Length: 624
Image (cartoon, rainbow, N blue to C red; front, side):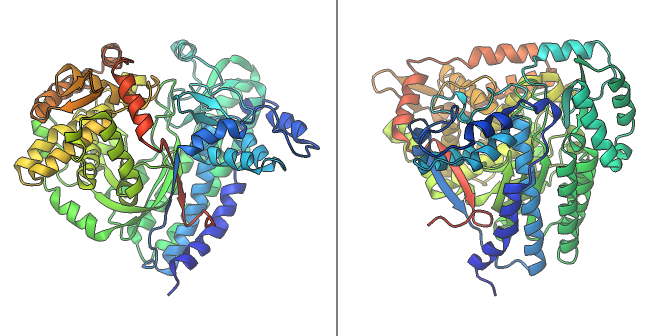
């Protein structure tokens, strides 16, 4: 039997090569002269100085000094040879999706990445290594600094709110005004479409993609005719949309092939997983995920699972609608998954307890699995602890949702100790030992289940993303947090948790709200956490001591406070009132330098690491 090191070596070779060489072609709107500029600046470069726009060691090192690097290396020895070969195909597909994600986030990312890897800095190899690590850490050329600013560390343009899935620098008002004009230019606000200006260059590129890949024209009827009309009178003031499959046609077709190859390899050992891979391959061509989602949620998979595609909208700071590419390859922990499934006997009783009027029936059994991460790509790369998908309300209603808990991240000792240090920096000494690995695991689990419960669509049937727009992700994450915390006492009452576990669960809820810096409004997680923090302070669940600059937790108030906040959040979602949502955010997303600032400073001083750079044994060479 092959050793774990031999298995990792077999998987690493071709996948790593793909990871570095397969990047999608840049859309026409990305033509900025960046590659020419970089090539000119690097030509004949002998050594010493970095070209303009590249961060030197003095700027890059402080971020890396606060970065914890961890390597995930689950034991793959139980996988059969065909499964290992299927994993290899999935890793290759993931590498392509990763580069596509970077290109979604910044139009100049592909050229910047290529230029960075060609950079010669004879006198400063540390500077080059630092920049490559920053690119890996932030999945592109824009860093989140220790002060929570978004700054370019390579010579690229500043980050745009619409990233590269809208025209650079466009405002939400321009998009809304254009849509109001009633033009037939495609699904401008579709979740898997790229918005472009109708220039001759853009239109010729997209028409060329349909000509090169006729299957895309067949699967997107009417698109070719629409582009043909627009190209007759090009106008940069006109907007149009093309599906992701057309915007990244060569890469999407390659992913399609790799998923089919993986499906063929899995057919004999896991027919349900193979069926999912085939349907998801087809989804990439149609940009409609219903077939793959149905197979994914209802399938009975054996040892492997994978989240594949574009789902989450967090990177769209313009409308919060566009989804971004991600992929993870997961190894199922059969024993822990079975125990968890047995514990989740009925969710309807929990749904019925929630403080809102529009009761709905939920599936009592939902697919929940405990997994160890083999590798992550795109938006999902990092220290994310759990996922619940799909987000589409219609797909969720028809097929349910699947929850995947990432055990080798959730229980990583180094990551957990950072959490304990954060809580200790913010609270009085008597609360420092309240948090446990199991309590934090349970809080995360029930946060994901919280997404499945509560308001799914507005009272008049509108999709929450469309109704609340920029605030949709924020309120959905806030709801999930609060459903989790509200449910904890009930879980204790039915014997699922004991008193110590309940306290740890609740301590995890306090850890969740703590912030290192003032959140930016486009950060849904951090903003909703600050809102909870302020609400907890306002209602006395948390009390700040002006002398010690630490907080006390009044656990006896927990359920009542969470109930009142959850009731308001569910009401806003149910109404689908974006103005009410914004007013609520404005009220509670306030930062007090003498309170939040004091605790944030203590956290920054007490916690060693701010960032997590995750490596994977199957795609990253060993570090010596």
